[in-house]
Length: 393
Image 1 (cartoon, helix red, strand yellow):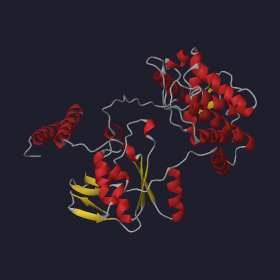
Image 2: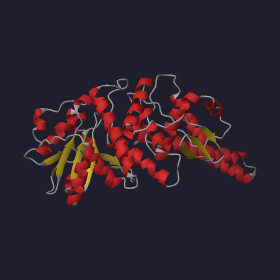
Image 3: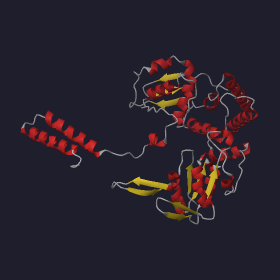
Image 4: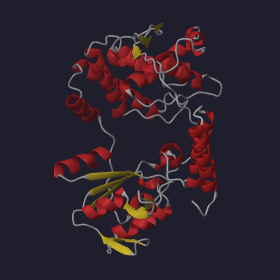
């Protein structure tokens, strides 16, 4: 859906602004708000949606059925005969520019994640277009155009495997643990992208090892993993050749199976207690190879497992072995984007000035400068008294 709108905007020569909606999105994220300025005051700042509305760009509201009711009501004015947006904070009304076009996309309610049915009055303002799933012929045409480096027989085998996985999930013949699963063009693209490294001189990233990382290791049970191997044998006309990965640590790199990560000196050294501990955990090496492959290819990874299964320890070890600093953040239902990305906070200038004056006083007292030190010390005492007085500040 998103790719279709993006391609249409590119062909028509229009700038496309994509806005991802969620239940935490409010009207300020769409229209704008008053933000602090460098001069110390506040000024209105347009949000991306309002900027696109005024410029006449195209806007794609993705995951529209995750938006709250207040956001939907705020968008109504853009969709009816008014064709304008009223900003109460500015007491101004902004009309839609002539070239402005609004698109919305949503996934089925069955996918969960807080999706809900949209009000009928809101849906009637759109022209609904139903998108069918991409067929094997569509996937083949896309891969042939995008992944020209991959051999034809490899593309055919990967697409056949992905189709068999998708059909198995649709029939619910297997993979019930951890369902619902989704196997689409993203999985094919990841695998074929990784093969570029092999073509560039990385023979360790073979097709079988990548299938094990992207498909086999995703399954939760041993029976489901065996079923994936059977599907691979059906698609490739040969068994999956992916033996247990080996771990090798050198001063220059850490290699787990076919994944190779360079080691840096900015993180934890070899003396970390996690390094020798993991060398004995052979059962964790397949998961470690999958995680290292994700790091090497810059893919986001989610470690799924019961409590105490070693998910955090696995990430800590890989960061220590590769020499990278690991930042841990405990997530919960109360976390919002400002705690992760940052935000504006009120600064207590008096506290900072008092701290600076006391630091100057300590430095002056500790310095053996005789009379000059006494003068600096007296000046620092005066600064502390002046800063502590709110009227002086």
